[in-house]
Length: 129
Image (tube, rainbow, N blue to C red; front, side):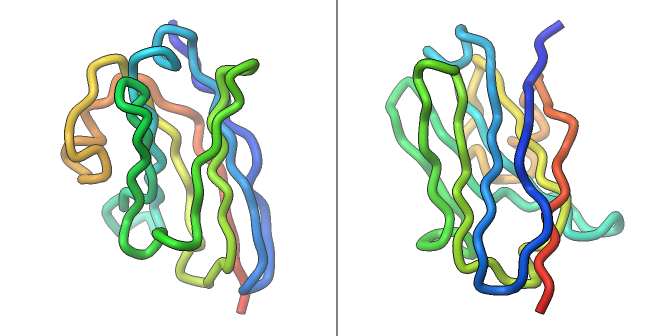
């Protein structure tokens, strides 16, 4: 049973910052991929926010996240952190970390993201205006 450990999130006012962390197994950290998707409302489709491919050390961001969100790595803990700045009310939602050693492309597309095998429990982010 592969487990992704998510932490972070919370509530903040618009313009504030939050971070989300996702700890993954070593085999994924060495050669896999990790992404974050969010669900803004139960009836809405999940939206890809950010992703990272370890094989090429490259991060990808959605148009809404680019320039405000940044992925950083902690190699000593096999942990990725999504730093979210200048948060907006529309960033509110449940954020899910997912990972795999087999990496679809593009990772942020919902149909591709759903192919990932390992998922975190989800973390709530609430941004008030």
